[in-house]
Length: 91
Image (cartoon, rainbow, N blue to C red; front, top):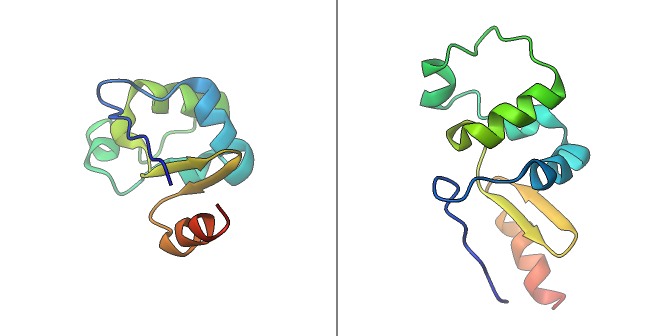
C-alpha cells in the first residue's frame, strides 16, 4: 500500500479535508481536548460553532486528534490498526 505522509505543521490540512472527516465523525472527534495546545489557547470552555472549530483546527494543527488517515474514500481518526490492516487485505 502506497502511503503519503503530510507534516501538518508545514502544510496544514485544508478546510475541505477537515470537513470530510467532520462529516463522517463529527467535529468533536477531530479536536484533541487533551492536547497541550488546547489548554494553552484556553479552549476548555469555548463555545464555538462547527465551522469555527474547523477554521481553528486548520489554523492550529496541534489541536487535531491525530493521525487523520484517508484511503481513497475511507477515513479514520486516531490509531486504528485493525482498520488499516483491513485496508491492506482488500487492496
